[in-house]
Length: 450
Image 1 (cartoon, rainbow, N blue to C red):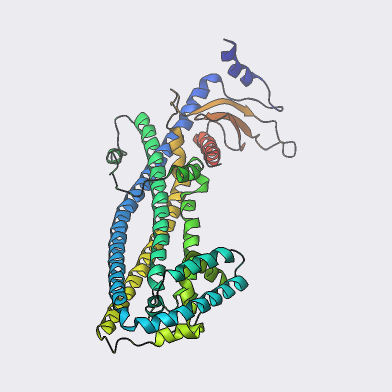
Image 2 (image 1 turned 135 degrees about the vertical axis):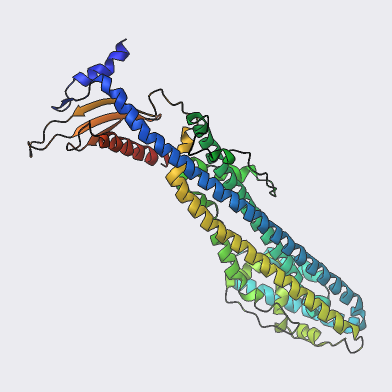
């Protein structure tokens, strides 16, 4: 009983020299009027979430087409690499024609090549020269002069690029899956709100019924890792972080990688003639040497005996070698072309996701708050409850001006909120409760994204 008297007592107490304006019997009507406005905004927000779901469904459909194109490009790239390997092996089988001459040159080429590469690395790169030196020596001991002759590091470079692309693809798939899950969570929560408010799907929102059907099951690979899911889950708990942040860091990293790929090691990926090094980006060169000892073969033109290997002409004694070398070159060019195509597809996919998530973030900021009502039970008097309406004391600077009105309301499950309405708007004016409800909802939305 004491608790029931508190609202009544609050109406009778003066507030800063003001007085209560509204009897308890009127509070319920004001609450109903404010709840009517809130109901409309909830309906609008549910429709906005439906827009998010529709956009995500279209994006998922486009994503399946992208996956198909990526898989087809990858298959063609792998076929070209396999063909290049076969031609390389066939050429290797024929090297006995010049074997004696090339082996002698190779034994003199190796120490010079190692010295040249390690001298550059120790002068240019920060650390790890000991490990790099051991890796390079092991690589040279297991290689043949054929490595110099046919530019064999091109295949190694393609295989490394393939690993980087695979990792990038996995990261994209991981984030895309989290995006789908995040939008689906918001949508499912919103459908619960809609179902409680309108159990019979009355017009004009009856069309929402179609959106409640179970989502289409998409095949997505690889499986999402628990580590990344845990790291990115807070994006959906705090919408102001945004879905955009799922892809922005990855996009920036990819842009840097592609810019580096235009540098020294990939400026001259075609042809078998001696090449001049391009060390304009020393950090990239250091990283390439650490990852792949075959990169040191690009310094072969600085060693006389290595250049002599390149000048050995075996095709005159075995014309079939010339044809094999052309076929190897064609296969490598094809593999490199599909590798660049795969990079372009990944970059286009990321750019598309940046645009899509930017739009989803806008919609989420505008409408996503409604999903927070999923576990909220609507009261019999509606979502908004008016507890007190008090008149402020007259303005001493302008006694003739009507005093402002303070209204205390509770919206959904939030803490009570006190709002001030200008005195020129009477509490009996229909605009009064619309202003109160609009301001209360604005505060609720602001808190929802903080």
